[in-house]
Image (cartoon, rainbow, N blue to C red; front, top):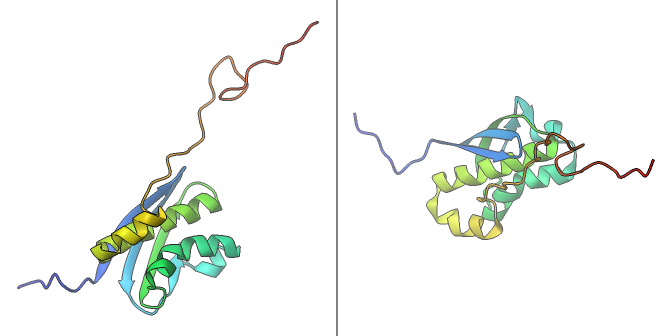
Amino acid sequence: MSVDTTVQSKERAVGRRKTAAARVQVLKGKGSIVINGKELKAYFPHVLLQQTVLAPLALTGREATLDISVKVAGGGKAGQAEAIRHGIARALIQWDEALKPVLKAEGYLTRDPRAKERKKFGRRRARRGHQWRKR
């Protein structure tokens, strides 16, 4: 049994941001995006977060040709949206290697390393010290 490697049926990738991790699956289809069993507009009612998720697809012109299924956990809504964007961009690279320069130039392939710094002992927060008192 021979497998034809020229036709992509399904690509998977993981996107991360802060404490959010998104497992993204890209298939040929009609452009539907399902996140944790809900449609995109139901999961992210805020338009700005919807645009964040759709950014790699809009940049490459693939909004209407690919179906995307996502399982995302951890973090808040904004972190989850950016984790999904990162995962979609990585899956698109696996789908078509020619898209890499476009997505890389826009910064969608870079994992944003910024995260909350841990609290240190003897301090109120990560860096905040005690407030000086005269009496």
